[in-house]
Length: 436
Image 1 (cartoon, one colour):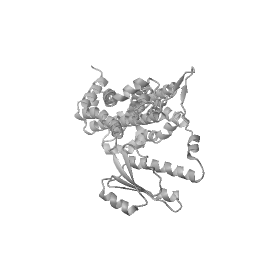
Image 2 (image 1 turned 180 degrees about the horizontal axis):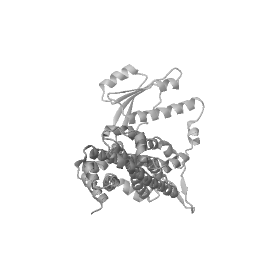
Image 3 (image 1 turned 45 degrees about the vertical axis):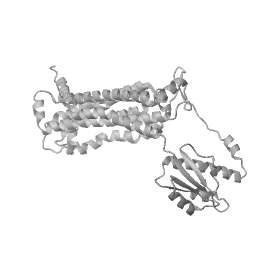
Image 4 (image 1 turned 90 degrees about the vertical axis):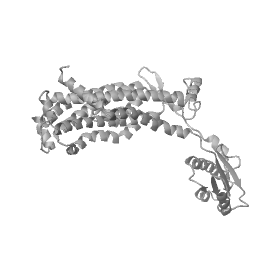
């Protein structure tokens, strides 16, 4: 292995993967991320402890039959009890909550809705409050209709809910039903955030490596054996290889976690979907499990392939700039004045992420995915929505071309700045180095 670039790649790669922090982040990263996604869902699906609620209903809104399994409603006679009596009884009882529904003069619904009280021996859960809100709102609406001479059943029958089924029509007229837009939005946003994190993390790692070698004067020894451009490219490619290994491990671990969750944590979901067949709908699926069925309709191979490409494209583009900045300063603190202008395009891509998600085929989304400095984030946000492949091709071509141009410019700064010591560099000075 006599190629200097290959030797530098090997040195950069091995010096980082052998660190304990690399192993710790690589293994714990997918586990922590999976826990953030799975644990809240498991906790939300766990049934709430049964609650006993005593009701003092002066407005006669809640009928005795209303209630569900985990909430047991028992009623006090409003003719024999007032709020003070109910509170005394509640404080000495084993009930979990007291619901008080007053009646205004002439049964005023505005007075009732603003004066309903709920007392608890501990903070009432959000589920309990939402459940009682639903019952009371429904009853108040029905009573208001009856008092105005309108049959609530007629209103209920006249209410129509529209469920639009959206399809994507291909060039050959083939129709493909779209999966849940909400899932695509979430997937696109998460992919864009990951791209930003990876590009920034590994590019800054390149800059710090350059600054460390320069400040310790090790670079003077290295430059005696290799050219500055070879050193810069070897460092960029070596740290990029670290990112590849880490990414592959994360994909394998994430896939294993997903299979384990669907197989062992939610086995009944797989059985119900297999019995329902490929055309399973939300009503046929177990509550909360239809998300797994919709995830299978998304082209993850395209998303993963796009993630790898735009990670490398964005990383090579920004790491070249960060390497040039690292060569121009003596300490990491001095690099802050240069980092902000370089990272502004990525911040703009994050700021406009909401607009791109809302209209992934709009003009803003299109141009943000064509500009090479914002394309890695904006295009990853768009990929789950199934954009035309020619846009991906053009965006990738522009990104690769810009990378080669940026490497040439960064190389000019790097070869001058890497041996420059004790001088505060300005943007004007960097411009002179580019013309040198």
